Length: 168
Image (cartoon, rainbow, N blue to C red; front, side, top):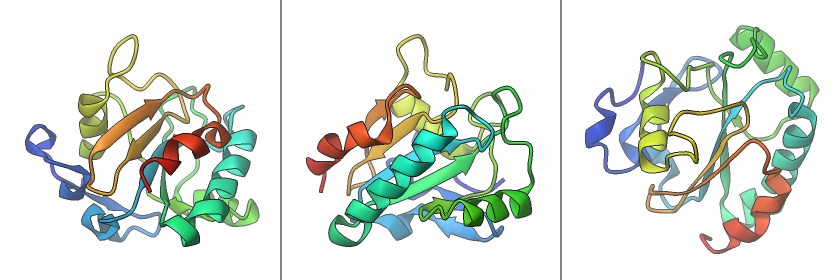
């Protein structure tokens, strides 16, 4: 597992490393001075069509002009809705023309959760507990690497445009 295993001592998301969909380590400090939207995704989830489309739209609107980076982490913990391996996920993302950055499949809950996700939940707990309740939970991270907002799966990405504006 890559990343800062001691998520409790992390000062920002920049203290973590995650593997991209090709299996390469990516230091999140590479995203300094960018607003991040970190999302757990699942291709077979009923929310996928709307979220994929709207995440692409956010990417189109803000990636070049404002420096938004969308980091998508496939996860199979919710009804087995992301069963594919990295190659299958990458192929599907290409067919859907997904433009945002895809990482390797991770657990977002439990002892085996990626340290980044443990940190995100620690920084912004949920309404009924800090655990991730479903696919497409979204975390907004400011340009200093601080987790500033958490949005549930029921919040469509298009609704985040106005909220993101204040962090650019």
